[in-house]
Image (cartoon, rainbow, N blue to C red; front, side, top):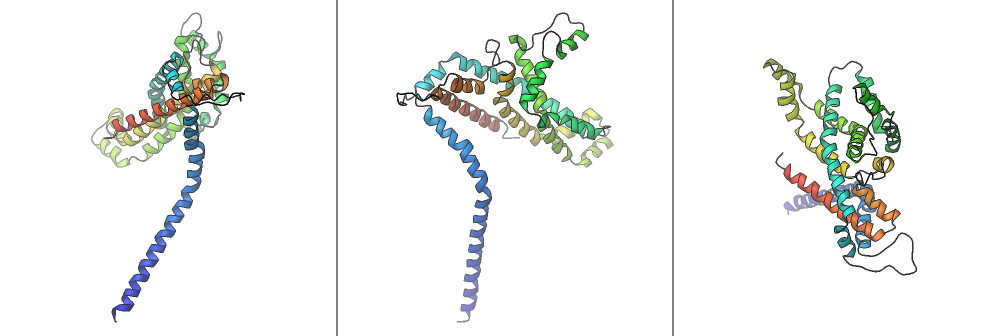
Length: 308
């Protein structure tokens, strides 16, 4: 009988704990509900809709003939389409060029902002301008810089003694590098801010110890800064690569995928097939293949960097 109050107390405690845990669980569900609804509405649901449409001959404009199930016909056509593979090669080439270039610019600017640079606040404000400027505006401005024969880029080359001019956006050899230069400049502030946060997270004691050991600026960068930014480097590498695969706006405004398809990307090719050619079923198949390729690349990158 003496144990009854104790048992009652234990039961009450368990009930309160269970009720408290349930309440916490409900609170967590409420917190993640808005993000989950948006994620489902704008990412998961469209992907499954694209997967469904990719097995049909759906067109953008309604036809008298109803939509029919065509099986794997669209996927077979995608695999045999040379324009699709050209767009894939262009996208991969763009990512290969822009990722190291953009990461190097971002890290250099972050190092400057993290140092005792005069007018550092002014430099920080100016360097963030591309981040708040729409890509359409940036593309129009850079179109003027690339203008022939008297654009800013050609005038710079004339100062170094070059004769004639370069058709930056009309020559297939220079069109993609021109897009890479524009894209790296337009989006580097995002990576720069992440690098800056990573730099400020490195303990100053490591630099002071390196100074005591007689390390110079390059040795401190190599043996203190780079190891301290290891996780930041991995994150930026993955984010920048995924951003590179989404290349569309600047290409659509500056080159329309030309010349001779040398700057056409997977995203632009997908939009072109869906809206211009009105082949919604075929464009959906391209979209599904694109998502699978990007997902596979992200997983491969994660596996290769797992030990890091």
